[in-house]
Amino acid sequence: MPWIDQHCHIPPGEVGAAQVADARAAGVTRMVTVGCTLEQSRQMVAIAREHEGVFATAGIHPHDAKDGLDGIEELLDDPVVVAVGEAGLDYHYDHSPRDVQAEVFRRQIAIANERDIPLVIHTRTAWDDTFAILDDEGTPRRTVFHCFTGGAPEARECLERGALLSFSGIITFPSGQDLRDAAAICPLDRLLVETDSPYLAPVPHRGKQNRPALVPLVGAAVAAAKDVPTDDVEAATWSTAAAFYALDDA
Image 1 (tube, rainbow, N blue to C red):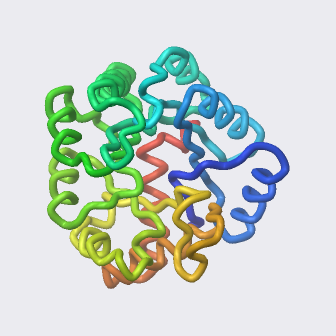
Image 2: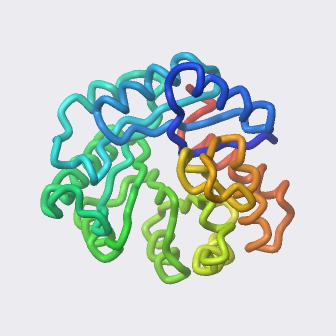
């Protein structure tokens, strides 16, 4: 089985094409490139159309919730779009007012439920409110916490709601013990791996620009945390992502 980078932000043009080629050479043959604004979501749809094995999401990040959600739903009709998001709450930066973040998050949860499509969640310093909103609106059948940054207690809360956990390069950082603890208790069929490129390059590339080709390093760190062979993580995350995003039907 090859790898899938289930959450990245591929740039347009020649740089993005080179990243896709490098990823394939590294055994990463599927990528989900994620929209955070209306314009970026449109860009990700265009990139996914250009490259076999690349899929897109369309959504509004909590940083950009103040700009509204208009235009996102029409993008979800494109066959290369496999999820809504990333959506959620970010109380670390508060680039949008918290009440506005909550409203836009609720609307994207509703879209996921109405359309029965996956929801990609971003949450930072906002666990309690994130869980409360999900409980109020109903956690979509297919939900993933991207770039999971909690520990074992937060992991259990996510898993109890039926969600998947997606681990990024942070799990390779010396400061990432909470994530390693979370990965250790997460069932193998309930986790995914991602780069969140161009951010959070895994060790030994920390401090450099991240790219989808590095997702095997994340997978190896997850395997170490779970004390299982890396091949098992590779096979499990491939199968789980394929089912979660309905990629084999795309």
